[in-house]
Image (cartoon, rainbow, N blue to C red; front, top):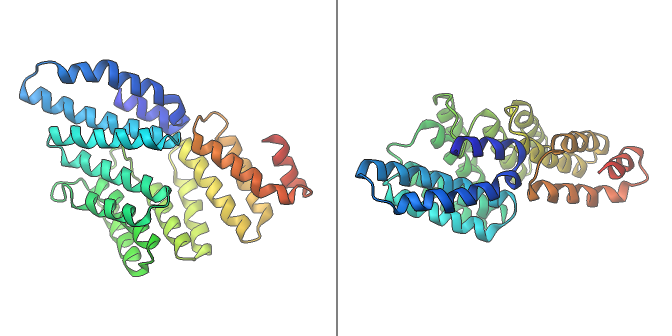
Length: 280
């Protein structure tokens, strides 16, 4: 169920998985956690329950239900503690850091990223280590520490280069994820040409079933292009964004559509922009 629901939300957005996942946790996993079990079975069950709760937190984040998302993240931390699962706890802290950063709480996001790096540091898989260090890079750049941000990115690249290729159902991380973080750091540091190159790489390298992430990065690229006076290029990116997001249920994607419209209204007399406004 963890892998199935994770696959659904990656492709179609949190809105498609949120109710099913919350119901599954409440009606199936909850009673199982309360039932008698051996120590080994109990530990395994608490560990997977922590992962399911972390995924539930993320789909609520994707649907901009941030209060509920926080509650599920905190529940995931408690479940991970019950399972003595520091690896999942680190994944949860990374997710909390991403949420805090997205909501503009930059100092808190940095503290959470540092906490993720120290949780289970001796046993953390290389793929997860790369993801956490990449988030440290983003949060360091967000508070203006350019040197540390670049150091973290180089470290994330090294960890990713030596990791295996297995996909994690929560907190999946790959070359496209790193390129996205590199683009985000470049944006924060004001290197817009480099940021565009990294965002294009993040779109090009994104696995075929991760439509929600691809759509959101396309929107970010279009916003950057428009800010640099590249209206035609921005319209091309937004057309691809609309095509990619057509079957997605995600309030983050809906917010991106509304943001796109607001940014294009001043160019409504321009044919390419007018066509997008009519079609969206």
